[in-house]
Length: 620
Image (cartoon, rainbow, N blue to C red; front, side):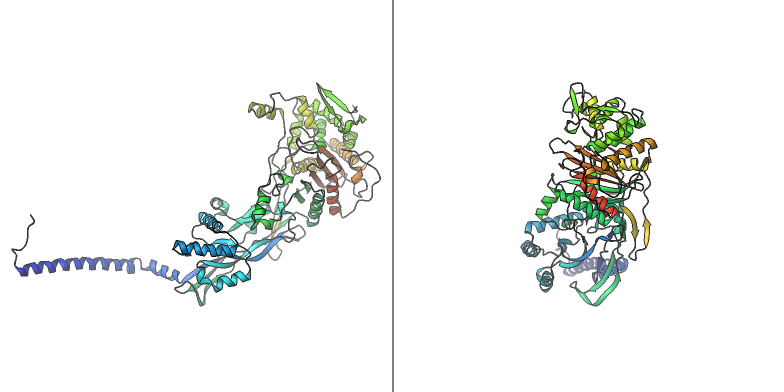
């Protein structure tokens, strides 16, 4: 049983109750006092700052990216303004039904399904929770007016002015220029982007990527005063710091030469690529790939554009075949075989070989194109008529020494080219060591040792060889300049808005290879004869060209494909300064598809047209 205080006088019981109530009141008062003390004295400055912040809104003003120009100052990429429909997810209605209704209305405005709207919001939230999400760019003024007039139906929705990349010439130089896009969560962790925020745009490919830090400007800031509803007050702008636009990037590209190359390649109607480069300093004058694309399609691609750009492995328009292709080269490889044989004493320029149209190694026959017999040939004539037998024998002579692979490697085949663009594909220079490893890993179709036939195939640019126009351009450049491997590049200089040069890019040569001057002269003489003399394989195309060149056709067999057409040229002969390479998938003989593309490019470079040619050329 509980004790009771009934024995106490009534007055005493009342006093006790008053004391208890008073004590509780004192405790509550003390708690309230100390809470007010904490809010007003200890944390007063903090809450005062927050209160002031609630009266102001800050907006980052995006800086326009710098223009990209060709070497003559012609604009290849600039900017245009665009209106973007944006949503702040934090201001969506709390009620699920109301939220769904607003998102459905927004989807109708942005031509998106409710599912697409939700997915866009989710993707934005993953990168930056609470940041505005762009639903659609390039919205029309009618939509802007509608949103502003019905703002109560679209809480959290705003239309902002943004800068969008503009390509005056559509797809011209697309693979060189590259593209831009919003930075993602992983990129934000990279050191070079430490100053950026979610929603910022960076270069994603091509020159836009490599030279992003120059092209990307510094954002500005606008701070305005707002009322309790978050609406701007009259005259409420407190701070306005304009953005600093990015600097302009001037490329080594010549716009006219680029146009000529792309037109010549497109005229063939087949996949392929070209490159033309200064052999002394590595400046790329033009480079292109077909199929190509319009970079503006990457800004807000439709589903059909997504399928075409990203999901077609055959056309693969985003792939730069000049740097990411992987092909056998046919007879354009013969200059490498010739250099390896000459420099290692396998032959002299004047050694004569009897070409009867074919040789047989073991049970395997190797024939000239079309089975043609060229009779007695030395190096110059072997290059002029593209005698396969001559080079088969060189491959046979070097198959146990690895001399051919060593020279090909030194000249840049099968190794990174050092290009200042991020797009470089994997290539393959086959060798005995590679073949043995391939068999060991169980990836070879048949378990057999490296044979003489493998080296014979490589000597004529066939077999397992996989390279691209860029690597072949470096090899021809080294022949043309006497042994220097330049660093290929498209970046020339950075300029401010007034055209003042802020930075010039320097690209030192990668390495130097000793090439005997007599070997170089003999090979160049053979290439000149191949392009412009007598029975040369490309005389039908270049015989009437008023500038002397040294060139070589190539016709490569690709399993599962038609013959691949190649042509490589050094100009002007005999003291070349420019290398030009073209290749066309399933383009047939080198003289049929690739050589006319090179002619178009050289006509643009030298501003001269070829005259009519009466003499015929070979089939190579």
